[in-house]
Length: 342
Image 1 (cartoon, helix red, strand yellow):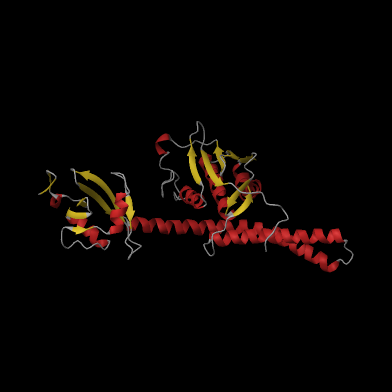
Image 2 (cartoon, one colour):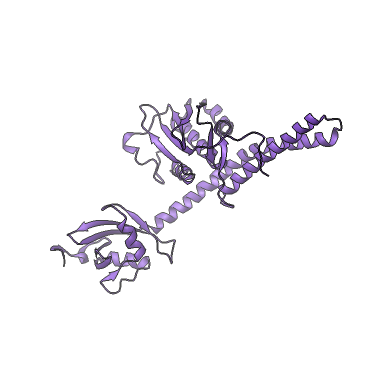
């Protein structure tokens, strides 16, 4: 039995990972399970009192009491300790801990599988996106080699078409490299209307088979966004697929874009499905949470993270009927069709 500010606490009888530390980050008491947990994440707790690692103590200091954090030691970045601080008396903190390395590993593997599945779906979409500009380049190149009677204006138009096609190819390849994390971050200005048209072409077979309808409207001030084209297209594809799966057949899906403020474009994806029950609205972005029998529970998680990586956000909007997801994307600048940097 140990006294902490007049409070009697027998940590030896506690079957949980609990530790008590003072305001200087010194652990002055801990349960047997806490000792084992500390040792598994590489914290030496042979002699009590002992100091918490500086990075862990700093991390705990930034939390509100009762909030949770995950800490990873610098020497072993694959190990994670979950920890929540609570006030114990006037000058001590009670730490409730749990090693969450297995959970993190499970999430990492599931995200990897999700990425592989998404990459497989992207292959057909990218092939579609590359075929048109490649055909244009081949056609115009052959025209240049076979025709010797082109007027100067016609010749300029042919060269312009080739340059535009090359620019589109470069944009797609840069976006793909960034999606695969093989190169530096790629952020370009995109026509939102063209992006949504491509999304519509990607999901057209799904819409046709399920008798679903998809409509979109791009309002003034929302015509251009900035980001990775592959990532943005995949996010909207995921949201449309979710909407079709929610209703099963005959879903009506609307994508409406308008200018949210000076720096963000607000794009709302709304369907007429059953919607999200009130008691589940706070959980739909949690990893692995799903109401589908065969779902992974990672679609919305990865989509939100992808949009946040672009300095935007993905939110669930209150709706009386159906589900309404809001995608906030950085606002882009108009790009002249003939402009190119090769």
